[in-house]
Image 1 (cartoon, rainbow, N blue to C red):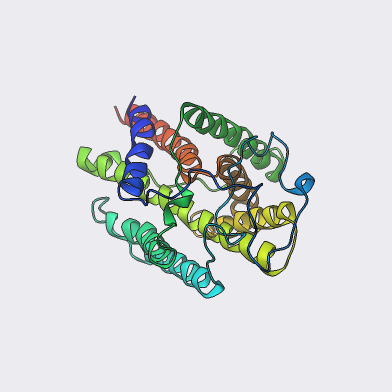
Image 2: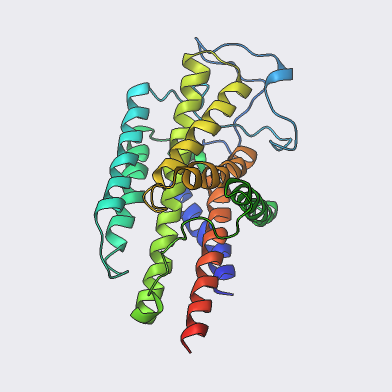
Length: 299
């Protein structure tokens, strides 16, 4: 029930904050067809614009910025956004506290530094990665969570040579119940921020790579998406190396495969709130199971 309440209303809260003062002229969808492409962007035929309906929804929604719509975001701005992401990750990695309440500080920095940089540098269109959540988007969160569970389990089983439990476990909930209710509540609030930060940490570089591949290297849209998809999955997996004892296989292949699925949620919906929702359900379900099991074992 706790997970259901947060995953139902938290994305809406983020969306309202993002849109409450948004420009009236900001379109809900970016048009793939019927729009004149900016100078210097390679022309494409309709046949190679989109993946099939399994990957992308059959609508006119598109990623922002990669084709200079709704505005051009220069390379130096993308580099600044990526550097801010690295700085936020460094804060999360090197500022540590035993108290979950104090851990809110590095978690706020983790999401706040890149998001604030993005907002400042792409005004007024930073809201383009947020879209109104509809009923099918909530369904997509559940579907991608389940796909993620299946894919992660299969990849982990293959990578471990068929051994169950052959990898380093996530110690995020170790000793958490001993800290009391306030500590547990602060943990869920903190991981809410951190998981949204992980989406920002991945999706913003995804858009940067997509822009560089498409508008700078003049690759096709499909090739650009695939490259951005793979590169940011490796980027995300590498960031988890310290968490899993520098186990390269676990971080890059297992966690990276999970990232492939979560980024697919964004590719399909063009909405960071959907990939965040799937990510939140996945990790909170895991954390809650671990906490309940630890509480039962202690009683």
